[in-house]
Image (cartoon, rainbow over all chains, first blue to last red):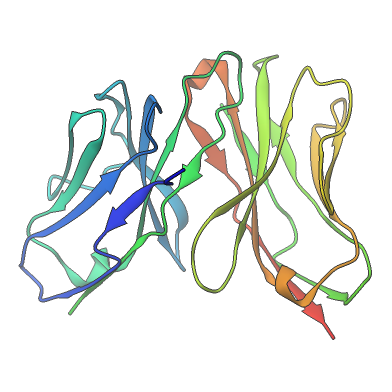
Length: 116
Length: 115
């Protein structure tokens, strides 16, 4: 079975440019998560969706960040304009609807973003 | 609110020995799940093992076992017969019904296996 698929795997961009990260969750999964990982702040949840609807975006750092999920098989995380402090690994992850507590979250391989 | 605490920033273990990575958690929800993930230097996050709060027995997956002590709110990961490939960062995480699918992660423990 295909896992969570992210693209691009690596991106280097100049400050001020728009960055779009893409994610295809595991088929049949109802939850989709966007995480950011840095050395300084560890793993942070940015936003998550349930059945394509954003549930909690309190982790989105500022208005420069936006995320969409137009259908069950695709999501984007956009940064506009990008800044050097946005350099991080961005993970997309997905999970099934929980029948009881304990959604096992499956991660993509991450998108390594460097803003210069 | 959910909280996960991993008190060991780094751990060393000799190859072929067992090692325990500590994790304590806090939640007011009686129904929750606990997870461990492995992140090798290549960066991907790999799901290792899951324990449900109502599970009667400790979870095991191959060389991984979860020492679940509910009264102490601890969910330690035990890796038996360590291998060099076990060197990685390990994250403890939890989710509960109150937070509708959202998981909280600890800060991680870096494990180094010595030959």
